[in-house]
Image (cartoon, rainbow, N blue to C red):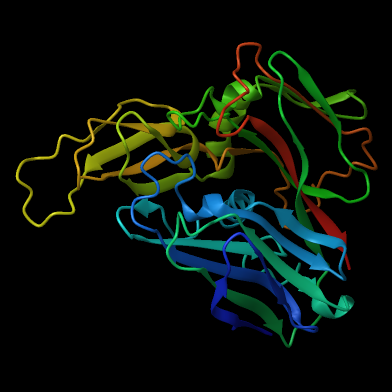
Length: 382
């Protein structure tokens, strides 16, 4: 038994604002897909844009079996978050922009629990055809070159036994929160659940690209229970859940950014609640006439950081750490090595996840409204 990495496509062009499709091999045990995306920005399109990273323009990633069976279905940021919580490390990215700067985003899609999982994987021979679909919303206004995609398959060769199954991951439910209202959700009973992620994306205004409220206010009270409320699993807010996720999982979300931004505009850093931020100003001139005046606002806990007093040719660079990678916080994670502790919604029905939005939260924006979501990873047995 061994793992083989096979490049299925190399630097294939993805046309702007289109869906790229790739037929995966008809046979083989597929453990993971490595998706490597790159492009180059068109001049200075992101000085005020709320969406400023390549990941922001990957609007849908799907793996579909036989035309209709969902294997994976989420946007690029959700795919990246699932990859992070699988691997406990974020794939490589280049979140940066300054005059024709190259952009890069790598994403790992696992059909098992993580890369090179020899117990769970996708047996492609169980389907007539499996397709990878990637939809982007980019245009030539933002990027000067087509998005290039490299797709790498991780195949288990000469396996001694067939995989026990694979994990279906999807944005199971999305909704626009209402201030002071509770969203009630009964989880589906068909499949056992390995992981539940809660996603709370704040509303953003076009005028300043800042968050209108924090992600934590969008899920101000969470009640997660089994057997129609008879057994409570979690009762509290997203802030507490997020703080506890660091020691519980043993990993802290981190991102790095280099950004040239108009004064007083926010820029999204991908860490929902920023506890630590190290920021410094750089320069793109060989011999700057004076030390640049560009500065960053200190102690901004929101995922949308802020630049003040921007000086030309002096982009801000920073490292950001906290909780809520890509605005996602785990509500439940199966921890046993054999996954014997997976959640069984059929056995424990009704499994309820009821989420209240703070009455003081601002849920509307001119760039986009707030959006909450529940992302499920569920086991499909062989």
